[in-house]
Image (cartoon, rainbow, N blue to C red; front, side, top):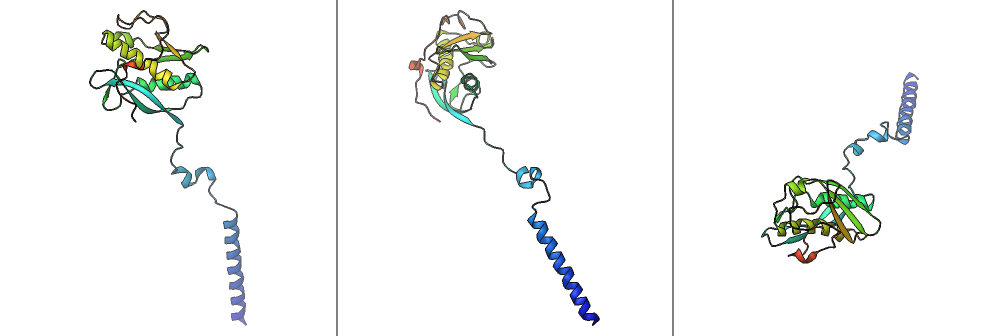
Length: 192
């Protein structure tokens, strides 16, 4: 008799344990979703970007070469223009050279609503420029082409230095007025 009571009690305990286990599984994880290991180990979400055509110096010094570069997506046309310029003034891709002096910063990029983009560069674009009419033309064309090739709403570009209109960068190219795109200085096709 005692034996039978122990078997029945053991069966009841076993059934209770199985029921409790099923109930725990059914209610979900004990760890909050915000700190699950799978979320901690997950890769960061990719940042939206565009593929922009930027212009750098040809390694042989013959002109500009176009390169396709991923640029972060801007929230507005002005933000996109600034992102394009930041990439254009950054480290040039392999096989190309810098045509904008090292240390030149983008102070601002804005639009007038009539198709003119204003590129405001720091003073290093003048003080660190190597000089020469061809080098000056390459600098301006690289900046102008980068903006106009990638932003449909920009037809021409005004170049400012430290927020002001200047006559020239290094004594050769007249910066009065706006510049249209000039692809005549491009000596190669766009490559990735």
